[in-house]
Image (cartoon, helix red, strand yellow):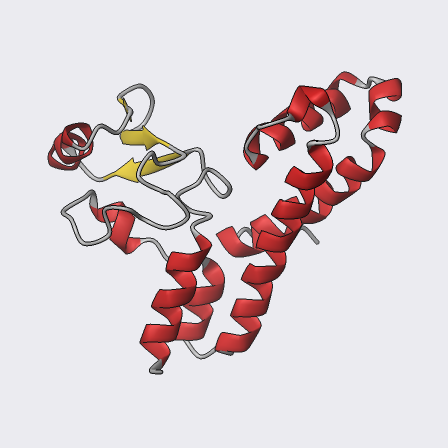
Length: 171
């Protein structure tokens, strides 16, 4: 299999850019893109800088269900940092795949562990993370003890997400 085909297959099997794991919105370039997104039923946001639509994408069902259809350019144009590094020969495909699979596995572990708590049952990972982070920010020590293992997984998970988004580590 060609390198581009391997990258494409890994990208489509991941979906973290579409399912709300990496981002909660996707950027639209202009009003034309906004019209395309609106015509596909995306929840377009016009407040704030530029135009965006909300994620998770309702067309993402384990993979893009409208992959071959016309859609906003952001849907075809986004590449996570590990895949960019592969394209620039700064990372091997196998290293990028391991990083992405590790992140996906940790996300699943968070969802699985969170399902032990009634308040998180059926929630997507980004909502679980937001709720648990709110507990941290509130300083609720009892909840921190209760969610201890979940908190540790989320801290690890967020570091991996930063690497995939391409956010530099603080020194």
